[in-house]
Length: 122
Ligand SMILES: Nc1ncnc2c1ncn2[C@@H]1O[C@H](COP(=O)(O)OP(=O)(O)OP(=O)(O)O)[C@@H](O)[C@H]1O
Image (cartoon, rainbow, N blue to C red):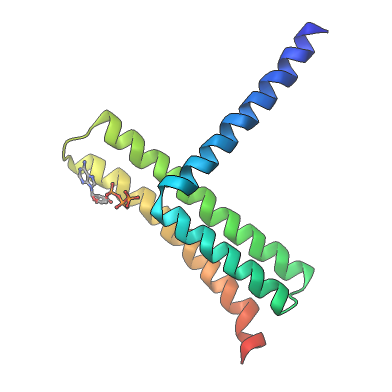
């Protein structure tokens, strides 16, 4: 079954490329480093406050969404800088929209964090 084998090998290679991309993001992007530190902090807080399985699901979903959208934002910024390194109002608009998307999901994540932890702290 050479066709199936090559499909499986290709999928494994794709996972390798994606892992390399995730490591590159963490190593090179300051905003991702901060978000990963916050993710570690809320994970520790989750164990410390013994949050429920539903709260874990919301927390994991919120953290993954913020880091994932930040990764997409970084990719959009890199594409912009590659295709049009000079100043251009339209590039600024694209980058602002992309940054706005990160801000929106971050606000959602902060609200989820407040709903989970404020009653446990106060
Ligand atoms: N080529 C450009 N033309 C017009 N405006 C730009 C251009 N590059 C950046 N800007 C403006 O500057 C803002 C910041 O852009 P930049 O690429 O530095 O993103 P950043 O959020 O600071 O990213 P990072 O810190 O991850 O590099 C953009 O949102 C946009 O408003």
